Length: 305
Ligand SMILES: NC(=O)c1ccc[n+]([C@@H]2O[C@H](COP(=O)([O-])OP(=O)(O)OC[C@H]3O[C@@H](n4cnc5c(N)ncnc54)[C@H](OP(=O)(O)O)[C@@H]3O)[C@@H](O)[C@H]2O)c1
Figure 1 (tube, helix red, strand yellow):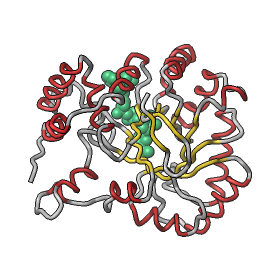
Figure 2 (figure 1 turned 30 degrees about the vertical axis):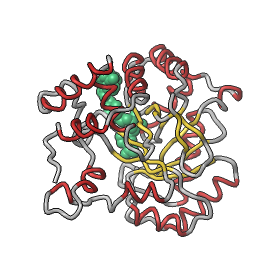
Figure 3 (figure 1 turned 30 degrees about the horizontal axis):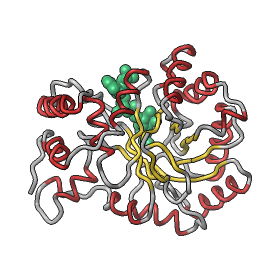
Figure 4 (figure 1 turned 90 degrees about the vertical axis):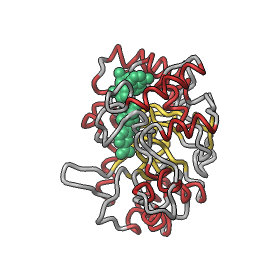
């Protein structure tokens, strides 16, 4: 398994993480097989959130994994907080109670990584920093990061922290890559040149913040996978053509497309199917040529300026 550095944490992690958002849909037996498959391939980075299945995904994970002290150190547990049924909440009370809930459900004493899930417009960065410091000092969270944040929001949080944020988890796939498109179309009047995320890709690279790609096979805002989707005929043809060159699957090539970017992006796969997980993991090991990478990029109706 290819490995990358997780921000400035000093941790070396696989370039593909196992997303647990959809785990709640599985039975205990299915979850056990799935997690066993992940570990057998060296996939030991698990992405959770307090809200996945209203906590059920974290509970099922702990049950299926049979977490004990020896096994705990072999895996990296990441969870997220800050989304509530009323909106977003980065207050000290909310973050602390969310972390307590995740620790209880995951049956562990600490999270390796805690992310703020989606920006809270009412965020008080000094309060967040104080909360993070407390969680770190208590040994409840080792490293911190964000998700769906732009450079300004990250800088504001970082201003009050005396340790670095290590992760920014963003939606990124062949069908949704505005952070890449805006860089390619810079200084043009094309729509692709619109910079909605404030140059987050280069910012994260400059700051050594690991970008994690959520929904690597989805189009739109979690509308479904683009694999075999009739709305994406050219993309599927190109995925198939490249897959045949490597003797692999279209899913693997879609993951390879993310892994080929020199930013050392960690793909967060969302499958809960062991076979599909193997395909995605295989893709994270493939190094596409420049031509293949650009051909795939263009196969979603994009033109180069
Ligand atoms: N930070 C955020 O705001 C945010 C938002 C959404 C998600 N996430 C995280 O990102 C993770 C991934 O998101 P996602 O679930 O939307 O990702 P995804 O992997 O793009 O989508 C999962 C869907 O794709 C299918 N799939 C996956 N691999 C496949 C394969 N090899 N062949 C055919 N179908 C395949 C899955 O079906 P099967 O299960 O049948 O394989 C499932 O329906 C989540 O688990 C969560 O941890 C974060």
